[in-house]
Length: 305
Image (cartoon, rainbow, N blue to C red; front, side):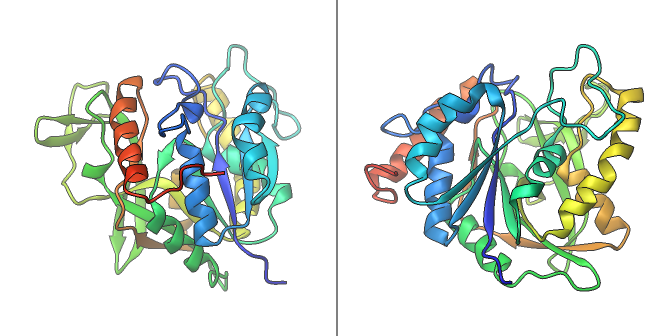
């Protein structure tokens, strides 16, 4: 059966650096959060089904603000990323409050996905073109002897903030395909330089402008779900020993391992739109101004849903 592509939105993050539920922070003229613009762009691109990955504690607010209005236009599924969603034999480490990461988030949606799907973060603005590009790719994206995945890449200089560090999946590519992706947890702008550190700012390494980074806009086949399920126990065994409170099962690292082991290819797609995102509260005014300018230009209707 040829299942139409679904959109998976990861909205269960705590938003610790932002200091609250940044997924619902208002940026539009009518107080709309970024996620509503992504949903509108996705619907316009052709997506008809959306899977929201949320935490149970924000369920009521999320449905009222996001889910209920959108449900009149798209098929909706809710899944919950909770700390206790673990394989048999594992328990939540004492003191752990942080979610288990983006790989775990997508794994939580396994039972409601029956075809190819795109994955996005709830608090990133990807642009209309990005959704068109990934949707059209998913229509023909099928596994053969390898998993055939895709991602939309962005230039690193267009994804930074003036207000602190960011985490980005820094990509190496060859012939339009991903060859490696390194999750850099602390990237900062230092004047005209872009640099990252892995040892708490003792040494900084330069990243060249024009470098492609992943913003977690992925195009996956069903194959990723079995890989996530198979790999999660091994991740847990290592994380519970080495970093029980903060270890994360991250999509870029999982995808990197599949590419490295010659089990998957990842086509790197490009969008002509600018990315906007909210990492810190101080990012909010600039993002809101950019999105409201697009509303003024008529790129979005007065009421999205």
